[in-house]
Length: 290
Ligand SMILES: Cc1cc2nc3c(=O)[nH]c(=O)nc-3n(C[C@H](O)[C@H](O)[C@H](O)COP(=O)(O)OP(=O)(O)OC[C@H]3O[C@@H](n4cnc5c(N)ncnc54)[C@H](O)[C@@H]3O)c2cc1C
Image (cartoon, rainbow, N blue to C red; front, side, top):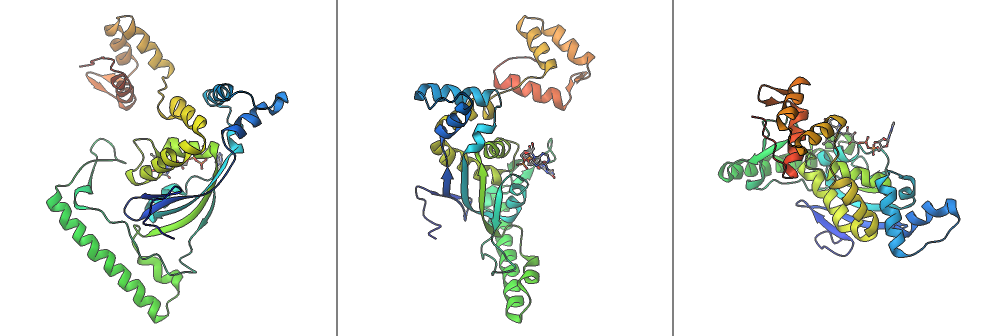
């Protein structure tokens, strides 16, 4: 396997990971064909196919998307894989470190990429450590990885079972897997893992799968997914009420309503209100609450 080379079907991710397209079944036409089976009509014009796919996705008629399948070969750090494997609707075969020697590669962090803990999101990161300090962390990381690997090799040489020898390898160690999933569940995976609140590392994989593979495999479904799912915004019932007030120039009434319903206390928005304000901000709608 030429893992250093990007090719038509092979895409590098992170420092030593990749996504390789192994196989696909079906394409945009399969979605259309499945949707039309109930009418007994064959595939019509391309423009109609596009309209139908967009209609199906817009209205969450998801089963026709299950007619397409994709199989990927991936190489991914174990901590990232731990998030990935939570998606239960895929078929998986993973490299066995009980059976084989572990992959001698662990994800390294460069001096400028040590992300700091976010202050307002317990699960997230924001900003990075100064590169000078980052360089020290990177150096210590290299020492740690080398020590872990050396100990692993020593255990193997001593005859310790691979299943036990591996237990102190870092979570950054790369693993490989074959991952097969239908398009409906893949889009669900991409919607969750391409989102800005997903961890950077898995987002890199999801973006690679979406932008480099899915966009070419099923361009119409991908376009509809970007329009109606990935880049769309939804508003709750309450948010629609407030939007209506803002649009008809009743900003004070909108603010009073948000206070009344507990979304804003004094000048402080709660989490839901902050999310709403962020959506307004993205759409360049000015609604100061201070
Ligand atoms: C940003 C982010 C943060 C997260 N943080 C955490 C965390 O802190 N802790 C944690 O444990 N997890 C966390 N997760 C994982 C998350 O809770 C889900 O397990 C993961 O995203 C998979 O989603 P899913 O179950 O919808 O997907 P899949 O497993 O792919 O399932 C797809 C869909 O199939 C259906 N489905 C599949 N299996 C079943 C079933 N057994 N019963 C009913 N319906 C089923 C559901 O409709 C589901 O949405 C996080 C995920 C994200 C994206």
